Length: 565
Image (cartoon, rainbow, N blue to C red; front, side):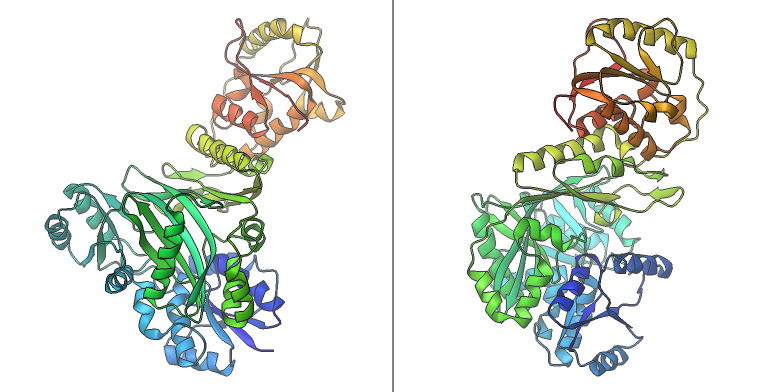
């Protein structure tokens, strides 16, 4: 059985393993050395990626010298050597070249990996490119900024990925601050930053175009349109990426331009994950990455949207030219709409829980939720690039309106009740005024009598009322549904983690009849992640309706159930 080697098999590159096995070949993973990264963190990251692979694979390791690594690979007599992620592009290209395997000529490697060189190649080919200059000092950056009469610039490392180190600057002071910051940091690979690329800023709509090439002919795999936002510190971070299903004005021209970029870079075989912008002058390249699209997208998820996934289509380029050509002739027809919401951490936070994990699965278009693991009290730094997002949600549905509704809901939670995404679980000593709680509940009960039979789920016993009241510990003995439910929980929520609080409230909604009303007073929502807005987020998540309060009831969230959940 012939070997196919995947260098740096992480992120969506892990999909290669199943595809290689399904084609009757033996997958071999070539694990890279940590480089400038922390060794323990690197090993943990690699292990977490290997853990998602369902098939067996052989594992070999990069050696201290390239020649040693080459000899190890040569003995395996591989059919192909592929890059699973960005850091594997250089080594996989060199190995393919030295072993005489299918790949892109080695003289194109700089244009495949360095952000300045790829734009130089576009200029040489007569294609639109972005003006820029590699600088090693603040003075050089300012000189370029002024000599080119630029209004705004983007500053980024020459060799990096996932928007790590990308800064948007609109004046000289911002350039100076960004340069000082970045020259004291490392790039995405853990290497010291000694030079930076200063580029003219192009302001437009941003896209991802994923292609694969066979013998110099590229074909389209998938298109995404994504949104980024600028943080208070000038970092440009991802908010979401949504599939492009039907081409709008200017997007067909983008595909043509993307093909021209692939050829100008010199790609003969394999993938280009290209990032582009469309402004009033048309499409222009931001950068290319010659590996599968990232974000650890499951193959099944991509198949649901595009009826294909990157790694399988890439293997066609090398192993099945006939199938590549057949797929190339087919029209671009995604079968469902996909969107990925990336969570943006607004400030440094020590989180102990992630309640959103218990909520996102209720969304109609939910496919899966991916969150960074929390072990004890985990530090999440303010999001400044893709690597510092705390997680994301994959959405897919045949109805675009449903996907849009779900993405807007997640944005609303992120903005209004971030405690439902990451929660600090502050250890506070709450003092409950039970007499006051009971007094206010009695008022709500008087007003709510008109709504029919009531279930009161309470931590405080209420005397002299004709309603069925029960404590949380006995809720399992309740059967049936009620016209209205009044939730008064505080003590029961204080000693459990936020994920459990969400789980408790979700369960209580099941006791509400279709057409019924639920009342959640301040004595409950004060102890829920995000407070009142957190409860309202949960109500929206469960597809309930937030009702306008009647006169006489204050500090109470009222919701109704209009359909079977």
